Length: 409
Length: 105
Ligand SMILES: Cc1cc2nc3c(=O)[nH]c(=O)nc-3n(C[C@H](O)[C@H](O)[C@H](O)COP(=O)(O)OP(=O)(O)OC[C@H]3O[C@@H](n4cnc5c(N)ncnc54)[C@H](O)[C@@H]3O)c2cc1C
Image 1 (cartoon, rainbow over the protein chains, first blue to last red):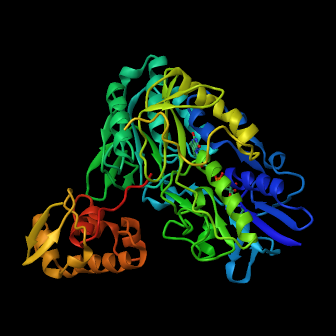
Image 2: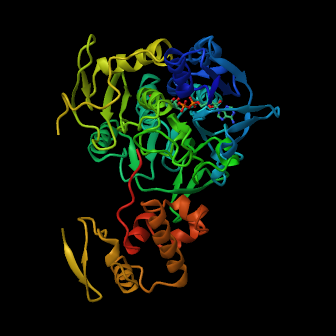
Image 3: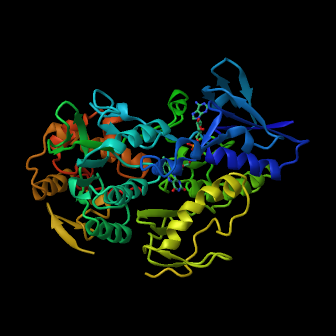
């Protein structure tokens, strides 16, 4: 029996377990997946917890329910990968050998990378919403908050789901309006980017939304430390920004496992071929999802598009065929914009998010970079799609490669 | 594309003032660009950053990020901001004759 080992049973690992199980001969291949946690979190749902739209129970399911029975699942933390020996060591000292390895260990927040961030103010008046704990703590805080200066800052790029901070701001504007205290809350967005978003067209359009919603923008601000005793951010060049409530997007880094195994870059992301998803260093290692160092968005939709390409390339590799350079960086993200509306962006490595229409067979066209009720509905439907189609590796009516149809330059 | 004569050499730039041909770079060009950026005389501290960036660029094919200059190049981020105030990654890449650092998504 040949062995294929998947590390990480989050979005990307779960999709691959399903696809491999569907495509490989079970007499020939043993598929194994390892994760340290038994609970699968629907991470896009974390955004809604602070505003009491979802609770923690709305975003969790047992991981095992999504792994096919033909796949061996091991609940354990991985201690180290030894790619030279084609094996990994688990924390309980068990050794697993492999013929092929798929790395799907994701990315995580690292608040301890910033001086003063995870200290006296942490979960008191400094919060994050990239973990379930953080999102729940923030919900409790917001419930009783009477207003003041709300600052949301991005410490450094890249971060997973780069639109999530904007969505948080839009929802905050809506939430405080609903509570009747919007006039008592001053909202400021602090980012190291030159504008509201990474790409120029979207940055301009999303920037105008910030203005319309009366949200201040401080661009090109690199947070050096947090002076939590005096409630202010201090940048590397000594500019200060005061807050009463800080919602932070800490540094995002790949799993510590990648660092322990010496397989990552300075952010513990794994050097990966941009179009094939093969590791740059090891021929029998593939990388998918947030764990890669690719300049594509770190998002669930991207992991889904990557999985199509990875599956095809895996089948080609075992048959000795050259790999296809088919991954184009495609991302497709709904952006919740508050008051029951949303936006949609669709882009890849070469084409930035553009306005226009996004055709979706059977459902109808969505509007790109425009606020509509239908986009909000798309965003809320995504949870159902995630649990019922995406994780199971089912075909979605969206091609892995981006399509120009409907987009306007 | 704009061409300018700097320190006796014809140098190609893009619209944002980043050199487009790293082979046209010399130490004299770097010094001249530093003056344009308002940095003045380049010190050993500046050269340490510039040398690291050029070597790293040769290896990786893209200008290093602030974090990489810190972690791999060994330059504390605070010092980097003192040496190249306001956006050191961009400014240092400009003076080192490298293209504009790619924004992330
Ligand atoms: C607030 C927020 C909002 C988001 N919104 C959206 C959205 O609207 N749309 C969208 O498409 N995406 C969104 N995302 C992003 C999306 O959730 C991620 O991109 C996606 O889950 C990445 O999948 P992954 O498999 O690469 O990583 P993950 O799903 O994070 O899985 C990684 C797994 O690896 C395991 N692991 C790591 N190290 C080890 C180890 N040493 N041993 C054992 N196991 C290990 C972890 O336990 C984890 O289960 C959002 C994310 C956040 C945080």
